[in-house]
Length: 355
Image (cartoon, rainbow, N blue to C red):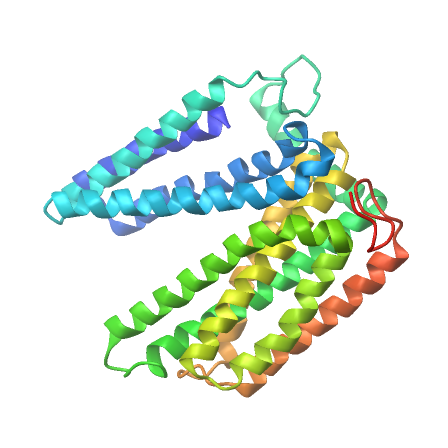
């Protein structure tokens, strides 16, 4: 948390310098990509350390609150950026000021992390610190060890990762569908501003769904269990996606975006908790790094696949029906796997059992 944010601070200042110097676009984008990529390590570390911060009975609530706070912070950052752009004349100098401001906030995050005792968040490690070369080599071996541990010793986590990867893929496909509908069906093809506004509404409605998932998931998991709530999320998407999406109308699409936010975030909250509860402390950070890779690859793959098969106006019965079928298959396979796997720590033995 400390070194990652310090690195983002330095890279942010370098990116601002590239903007002021009028560097080639590819160099600016490369620097910006590095800043963004470091965020994945931060998020993996946060998820891996959460069981050391709260008790096992509060993990679902913590996993619900954490991304909600992240969304609020991102919205606040966007608002601050908008305000700065209103105060400064547009151009590369204003952009450089924004990037510098972001870098300073990364520095604040690093200073905040410095206040956390080094051994508080885990994992328990040997006191001797290896050299950089040994650390990099050890990281590669560690990831392989994490994969072996995941496959051989943590079947509930494997099933949860498969389910959340599938849900993310479907969500990515539907995001592209909504994008094309907003641009070419809900608005005139010549009205790019209207299309962007409609897409923004859909994203905002979906964000509200993410917030609702944070509210209802702790209650639902206490009554259905983690696997039960995840199965309900996947199965319900198989129902409402075609029911609302096949009309290709704006209001049903917005309703679907809201519900998609609920089931997508609900699935992730459950998957995070399953991984935290079933993976040993020594391997948890590595598994969350793998989780993060799967999570993002599935989203990018969804965009790539959809771009190949979706018509320009976004109206494709086959794509919507296909996504619903994938949700239904995922719900059936996950429910079957969950029944065959003994409950992990923190999972109710029966749906009626509460924690």
